[in-house]
Length: 223
Image 1: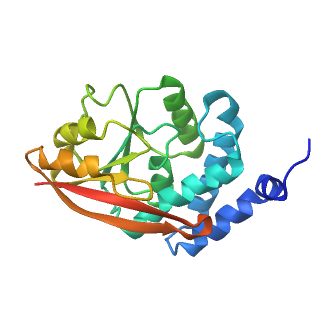
Image 2 (image 1 turned 120 degrees about the vertical axis):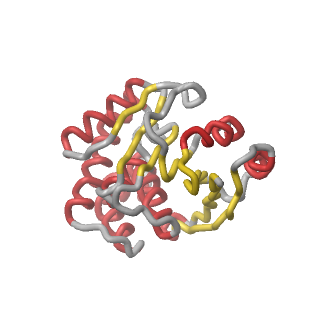
Image 3 (image 1 turned 30 degrees about the vertical axis):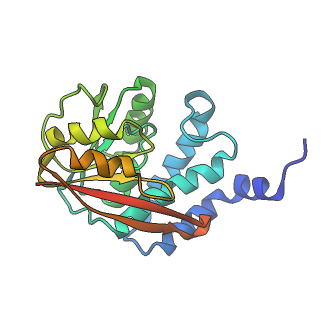
C-alpha cells in the first residue's frame, strides 16, 4: 500500500521533530528531560495498538503534538519545585508525565479510572526513575490524599462535575487549568459562576506553531 510523504517523514523522523520543537519552546529542557520525553514517546508508540493511548491514524505525529502541546502551557503557568500537580483523567500520562519530565521538582499525582493506562504510566515511570503517585478511580468519587496547588484537565469531558469537585482538591489560591480547543468553552464560564469559592481568572490563547494550532488555557482559582 502506498505511503504518503508526510506519513513516511513522521514515521522516520519523529525524534528529530520532537527535539527541534522542544528547543523552539525555550524551556529549561536538559538532556535528562529530553531523554525521558523521547523514551515516553517510544513507550506510547510501542503500546498504542493495545492501549489506544493516542490517535492511531498517524501516531508518530500525534504523540509529538501531544507532548509539545503539554509542554507549551509551562510558558504560561509556572511549575515551581515542590508544587503539587494533579493530572485529572491522565490517560497515557499527558500532560502530567511531560511536565514532570521538564520540571522534576514538582510532585505529580496522576488520576484516572483506567487500570491498564495507569499500569502503563507506572511501568514507564519505574523504568525511567520518575516519581509519581497513582490514584485510581472516578474523579467524581475518589479522595485526594492532600490538597494540590494545580489541577490540570486535558481532553476530559464532564466540565461541570470537575469544577464542582475541584473545590475539594485545591488549596486556597490553587489553580484549575482546562486545556481546551480552538475557542474557550462557555460551559466552563457558566459552571464557575454557579460554584461558590471559585473564580475564573482568564482564558489565554497559546499556539503550537509547528502544528498551526491555536488553543486556549482556561485558568480558575480557588478563593
